[in-house]
Image: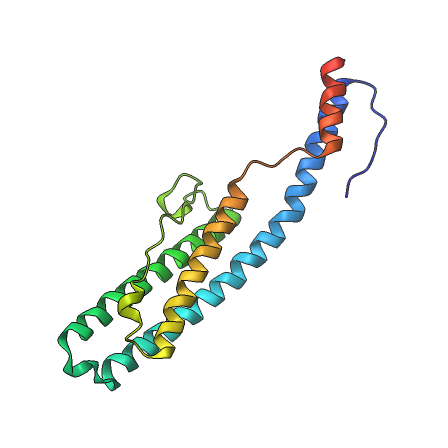
Length: 172
């Protein structure tokens, strides 16, 4: 909520700009917290589904007779699990930062989602549809987290009102 106040000097303009920024951060924080919580639940459910799907593929499929397929399944299982654990670690770190944990800072290794771990779809095409869907879902979730991180870390553009206030302040 932005309110217009008649300000007597440039210090007042600066205070108003700071107050507006604080208001925007106060509004954004609950939205970000809710996003993190929802994504955390999604990631945990997906991790559980991945465990079950890879175990079923390993135990019940014809790949038990094919050594190369078993190794391929193990590699893609490891990639998918790693991808999901990176997402979960990032979300837990965001949770800690939002809670004000002094041990969770923006420069920690868990504060950055990092580079994606791509699945080898030439190999994944030989897996059952449920496993393929889990792998694809984990890649999409990782990409969503990367986009959210990029958006949250992007510098906030000044609103037209803030630009005008800054011009007024510069003239005073």
